[in-house]
Image (cartoon, rainbow, N blue to C red; front, side, top):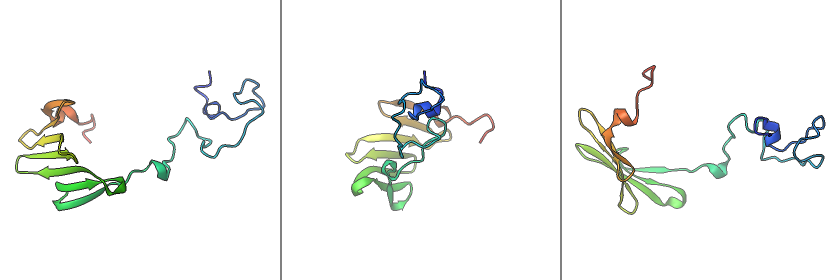
Length: 125
């Protein structure tokens, strides 16, 4: 019933509308901005995850660390492919560098042309 009204979604009282959710007991809530439901929320610092790339030689050969300085990924590039491994050694994904590059995520995305996985938009950008 109130899904299209961002003010009703936030639960704000509207004295002109007796059917407003929350009635007269409205309490200010700083975590819900007046644009709730209409604009994306500004991310709080609690929702930000910072990753650090430690280069072995370059970005194509690096280790990726996340919160708590825990290693999340290892990126290794050889002549014909780039492999992204989980910190436990399991393969997360692979890009085969050929005239027509291919991508694979074992058990999730079968090997396919990168052009099929990431198509170019109509305006070619």
